[in-house]
Length: 475
Image 1: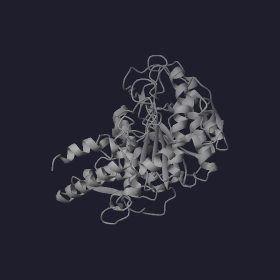
Image 2: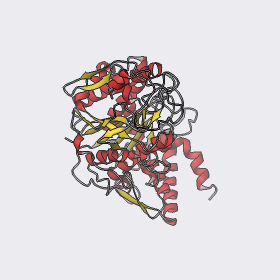
Image 3: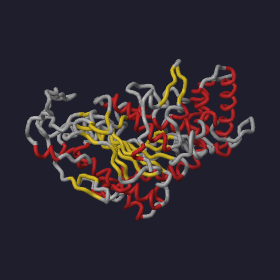
Image 4: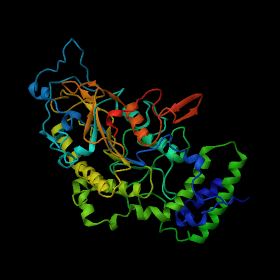
């Protein structure tokens, strides 16, 4: 043969998006349905699910709980005084020296029949509190961004483990043949801490890793269409090349020991071609009404980016994507929820960017009947300290933080757990990351103890050897 398989793949690469393999590969050479192999997609639920799909909103950097949701009068009474929790407890901060007690710089009020406290920085979300279940005493095992983000996203402090969305994709698959099971919409400013490690498939089949969609780009998924600079890439030429490549891939797969990477590559090519038919429509917001665009805050520069991605998330779950993750904030010292320098200046723009889009998403899902079987999650990797860093910022705090969930199977208008009088440590009904994952899996019909995979002699699962379902937030 005149050229190697690798050379052929390299030369053909520009043409993968030029042909709709949804038609060409609707049935493979073995005359089987042209969809991802059910063995790779996963299994059936363990029990009747309340939720069919998930939208997770992740606030990258450590959103400040006492400045958003966790009202603590003690911070106002002791503002400016040395922080002293009593009993001779040693107080430490991970990246600074503990400062004076810092009161929230913005008013916080009670809202809804549930009377939940919400900062004035989140006026739109405040109108939704009776649809939310708050986890008021979440706790992380670390206060370092990388490990904490891994813990919230993969259940492990270490890299190399499958993401939450990858486990869900592995267990339940996608409801659509022409879109992935797990889609990630990162902040247009960049990827979060850990980069792609937060949405890796780890030791699960590679087909379940998060598919990154760059919402702000002219082409949200690169290489889905051939570049204009390559006019020689025609449908007919791509068809012949892809059919030949499929035969080579299959021959190589049969000659080797089982290798999920090659199988995933074959399936990714097929899925990419099917996506050429469906993805452009899924990502095209032009068909949305002006009222819907206003609902998500697309007419405002401050919220247009996050609003666009929230609207995309709704469109994707409507079309069968199982798990969509929407990120707010890139990695780095600024432009996210990591407000070390000045809470009064750094927190408002993050809230302004996300408040209306999140409330709009909840209202839209509810109006369309989608909230009945869609689980919406709001998370961050840890919280902030009740005392000042320098004079006006807050340092990392794994001791307590806040998350919330809404939608399918969630008891609305409740709050579970409580932090201490400072919002320094989780004090009552503590929620670990393992409990959170166990609860979300439970709502999807999955037993977190039974969703596992034997890997290198260990029976691995998202919740490690921990986790309890939080019954108090279940409807």
